Length: 436
Image (cartoon, rainbow, N blue to C red; front, side):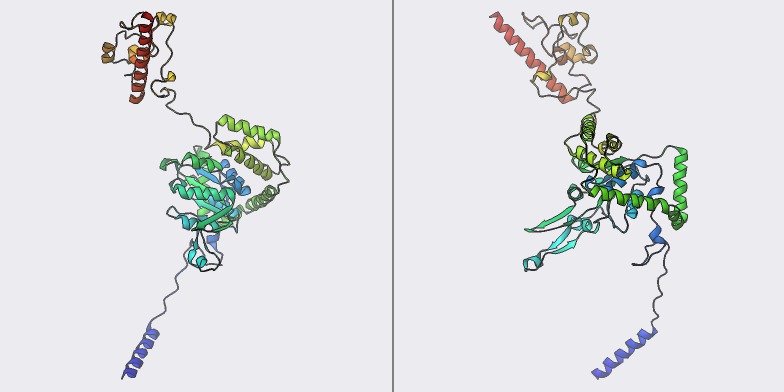
């Protein structure tokens, strides 16, 4: 009976298999990635780098980073819709068949660097390494959109590997390393947050993009994009000759940079770099090294026989864009705060001639009524109880009266008032000692 039931069940299954129609093959959608190993129109949907208009600094920075990966990558800052990601993908297309790897914001450290299988290593087998995004981007482009939103720990790892060309993974005493040479391209919108200065300094080049304000340039960019969207393959073919020329020049420049005997830096070039960095008031010497490498890459790209100060001047804005010291907007209107009781916290007393010609600046305008009634001599004259032997006002007397001014912050005002009062007390003590 059991055998009969099993046979009947098998018969029903066989009939059901014959009656079920085969699912229809999914239609191929235009614009999707073609199947693996097959080329199609989707393979042509990369906007050519030679067709990018109005952004010469962006194109130059990407080419220099591709020539000399030790520059440490390119940071592209600008508002939305200014060809940041388009340019990064266009660079990867020039380096084809090199990979183009995008790092998502939610990636973990192991997802980026790779992971080690400790169980196999402890069992005596060789180290089993699972490649991460860095390994997959070798000899290609690693693109990080909104790099300012990544955790600092991941950005540190990316910058370390981009500068050294080696990815090292260590876990519980087991380590593994592999070559990782790639062009790091990070984009960010300053409106969504900034990178820490320590991380900014480690990014080799920086480009600031702005919205095009020229009507003719703006319309030309839009027309080119519309032509590309309507006929991607035809648009790419129209720029094929220029793209091939760029590929050849790029390969030659990379070969020259890898040859240590070519394009040495002269003393004039070193001096030009030093002057640029000193004028920009950059911290450390990383900017000098990056500028020297960028000038060498530019000379290789232009086919020059030597590096000149002109090459330095051309790459200096890309190197110093994010490193130059920015003046403090409040430094001009607010005095520097120093601890109470120090000499620098109390300004020097005016001379007797100045007291006759003018009063302490800002006292009458800034002192509050309560301060004027509490402190005698509100116009900067000597206090009535100053005692004999004081021929000039005590240092900082005018400042003590002006502490209620809105020019100063509350903490600054308290510190300056305390310093002035301490100076007055010390002066009176010395005067009392002389009278005795």
